[in-house]
Amino acid sequence: MYSMSEEPVLRPVARSTTRTDLVSDSIRAAILSGGIKPGETLVERRLAEQLGVSKTPVREALIGLASTGLVVISPNRGVSVRVLGVADLRKAQEVRLLLEPWAVAGSTRLGRPETVEDARVALEEARELLSGEDPTALSLANRRFHRALYSACGNELVTTQLDNLQDLTALGTVTVLWRHWPTWREEFAEHENILAAVEAGNASLAERLTRAHVKRSVTHLARNPEQAPQH
Image (tube, rainbow, N blue to C red):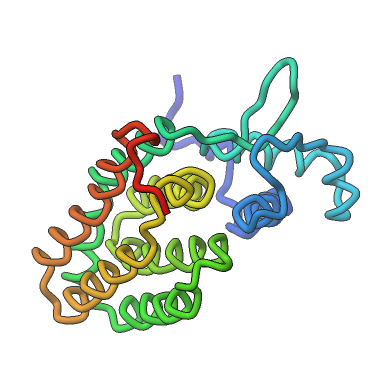
């Protein structure tokens, strides 16, 4: 039986960014920026060579990315970037609908100036991309906007869940949502209204606007893509 007087077997270690974390960040960035395409096979050896590391951190990074749904590990195909369908993206957005409005309201109540500052920078980046010529860059700017608002909610468990969902959202927005429903201008206007509510410290309004914003995407994705308006 363990005695409280005994010395602990393990001692705390200093927390630091590991090589696996760095590899994971690099692969994630390549996927979300479109450098690595949906469906593309990820070969450990090739990735290790490109990143200048051994295969071990690459393997660990891919396992971590698989846990978030960004890549898929298959006995037959190995590891590949996830190909999102309409139903996949809808499910991710439905979970966002449960978490993100609450998180944005929490961030608003805490009222940290850097929350608004970071969101405004991302919003201005998005404004410059509204022509739609670079939808991937626009999607990533939108991701930064949303993260600036929800990540200050004070609950790291919610933030982690939303980070994972935003990875799927950024991947699916360009390949699924905007391909059928090119709604980025409407989304930008909604972002402006959400940020105004956050800046004013109106948590209940920020929560309602965020819920309506995410729900609009869920509504689109619940339809048959053939019902999308032709542009």
